[in-house]
Length: 173
Length: 125
Image (tube, rainbow over all chains, first blue to last red; front, side):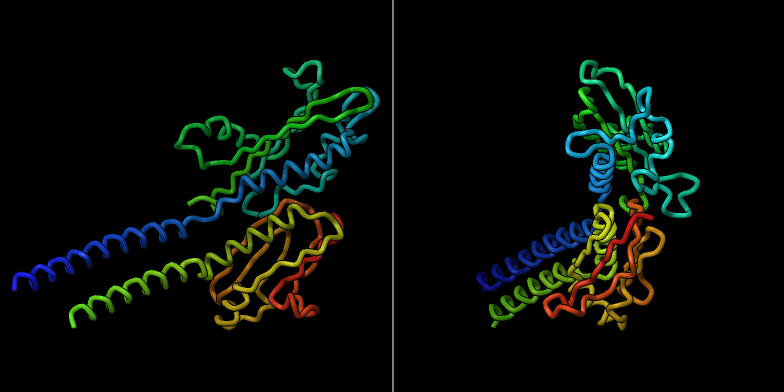
């Protein structure tokens, strides 16, 4: 009699434990699959590669970047067309574009001061990028930066490319 | 007898749990989102004159189950990819690469890629 009662109690406990485990698994899986995939970092890296390919080929900077007296302002103004990048891809974004990128050029002998820069897109996103270390703003934008060296004739330049992508609606819950 | 019921209930519980886990990753909303983003990122990294063949086996099964033709599930218009796997569903994601992408179509030419979609990247816009 005692044995039978004991085994029933154990079975009951067993099912209570199973239900707790199942509840935990259900809630974890539910919350995991109900967050959108955040692909902004990848998107930023792809954008950096595209910009880098446009600026430099086989270690040499694109000749279009330079005018007679140095860097070309018209290339800068026409950069999106030159590199085939479209930052206003959705009509609803016209009020607030979701992309920003900035290319800074440094001479190898002075890596502190940029000699030329090309900023494009929504400059306001840079502010979100600067406060990204605070947890509250961590998911607002994704900032990705990469650097590489490239030659223009005898001169060696460091090129820093920073991309900032918002698109929170599609990537963050 | 009690032991048999206990074991059956345990097996039933595990089966429901495994079924739940397997089904979670195969919902239309999730597949639409993952395919739309995957296609947008592939187009972003593409260069003119490339042809991309993407396996969409699971999407095909789901679309056919929901009464949609496989050739209608991917639409690309004005730098926006839309993947639709159910009548009232659909997920869109944009790409920044300013290339002309022709209408994507299922790959019927190769029996090995029968569940795949073909994306032909044209020139720059």
